Length: 325
Figure (cartoon, rainbow, N blue to C red):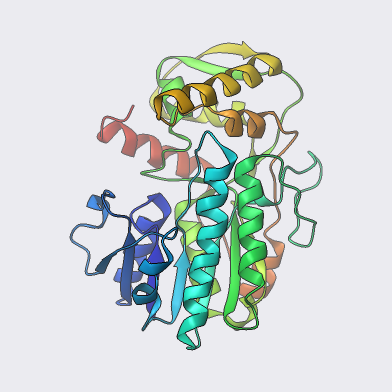
């Protein structure tokens, strides 16, 4: 396989790039000017400077490859426009560049469960359910999918929708490890809220299946682990791996909403993207975030291989070894 990976120096991009290199695939990595590419050091890859928000930088990036793994995007931003500029319009620019080559190429878009929106506590999301995102990030990822599949007459398109991704190097769930490390355990008011989570290794496996299997073309697929959890159970598991007895801190939903809004305001004023934001607050307050992997299992042979407990254990060990917690 000859592959381009956008967002190759990010958490998921790094894991995917390493797997492709291990397979002896040709890998071209698109990295923004000034971006930290240290996670790719020592890997036999072709580094190319570019940005999905800059169409002029994408022509050379997409030429001569078979598969474009489009992972570049933003997960934190204080304003709606930024999510759409990068996640949605950035996808349009990649598709335009691919269509302009006239070559048979496949786009593997990394979307998100957030594009589908929350689930009911007793029914996981299915791929055929209407997309119903409830916050800016999810809305931008839903629009990215719509844009990508609108190019299906010119390029092959397939999409992954991972649930929350765990693994060494992840920063999105790091805040929960830090909270537990301080001896605290968050308990958000209301009924238990089931969560689907998935190890980064299993997301990489699904992305490779999407790149190689004909059955994937024109379809979207969820990626999730074999079991669900809750925020409280996840924190209990982290505490057990860290050897910590955590004290429960009860947070009423209105307080969490207020903190999320305040954090976004602080981000606008300071330019810093804080771990807590309105997006995270709304996600934590949703009744459930679960999805089914039956379609990926049936059509592609996808099988999540890492249990949640193992994912949390190796993440905690990695964070400790590097002084992140």
